Amino acid sequence: MLTLGIETSCDETACGIVDHELNVLANKIFTQEEYHRRHGGVVPEIAARAHLEKINDVVQSAIDSAGISAEDIDLIAFTRGPGLIGPLLVGASFAMGMGSMLGKPAKGVNHLEGHLGAAYLNCKALSPPFICLTVSGGHTEICLVQNHFKYQIIGKTRDDAAGEAFDKCGKILQLGYPAGPIISKLAKNGNRDFIRFPQGMNMKNNFEFSFSGLKTAFLRKMSEISEDVKKKHLNDICASLESAIVEILVKKTIRAAHKNACSKVVVCGGVSANHYLRQRMQEDCTKQNLNLIIPELAFCTDNGAMIAAIAQLRENQHIFPIRTQVKPSLSWND
Ligand code: KG4
Ligand code: ZN
Image (cartoon, rainbow, N blue to C red; front, side, top):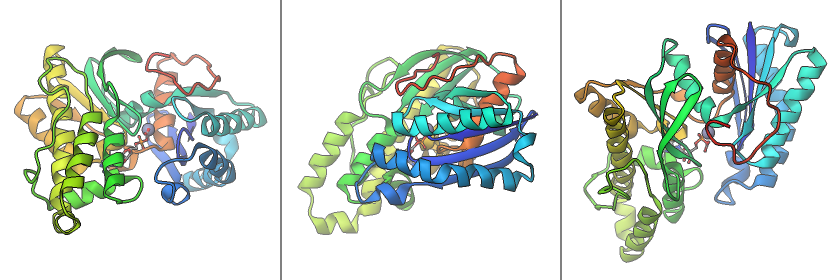
């Protein structure tokens, strides 16, 4: 059985194909970064139009690179939310049109669950219970997963998402969009103790996060130091910022695993591509005897293979209701 996954929730036009054992046959992504860079963030209308322009080519190139024909596909999955309404509608319409043309089902999946699907591509035997930290540009949430496809949110951000914190602080430094990967690169050689930035909700004995205070503190600090110092210590500033974001993510996730007697931790979403987060999470999981599962880099940020993966997993377990309505504010169990 072959499943094709279409992802268009934000600014990536993506298509992946997996087989019933979750082997990835193709994973093609057209990233719209160039379209949005000069605006400093994603412009929904521009994103929707770019998806419309590119989706046919991206899907065709995934089919070609898998060495199959469209008729070989058994199931078409698409992201139905959360995300931007225009971009979601483009992916959903394309998937449903393709489904009716081929006489195959088209089913909507949850983007957040899709990120978790990426973890199954690396670790096919992954099974609940586990703690799942999802960190992306729009979400920062810790879920307790006690059964397949049942998610108990035990903590989330009260304001900005972790990826958003990277991007907003990067904008202050005029690093370009998205700033997360750029900060990550610059931070590699930096002094993490150069500036002590606040870690929101650090003293609170819960699993909630807050990153808006960090952004304000960052803005204030950057206005206090001279352009020369900023230039000279850019690596140190990025490393200090990255540490403030990463340390609180690691601390609360590990605590959630202990509190809920889970021996497995999954980290997924675009920010899970962050080198330092991967390193620190691994160090602390090893110390605490926890098994850490993180998708490989190609499957961390938005992609079609993760959408195909979670669809295939649901299909294999016969828990895949047909839902086609797009919903920008979809949450975990919707
Ligand atoms: O999951 P994703 O591709 O899209 C959403 O669903 O939001 O995540 C994108 C977010 C952006 O905020 C981006 O800056 C961040 O993930 N990101 C990173 C890295 N790669 C992507 N943040 C820090 N370090 C990275 N290496
Ligand atoms: Zn995402």
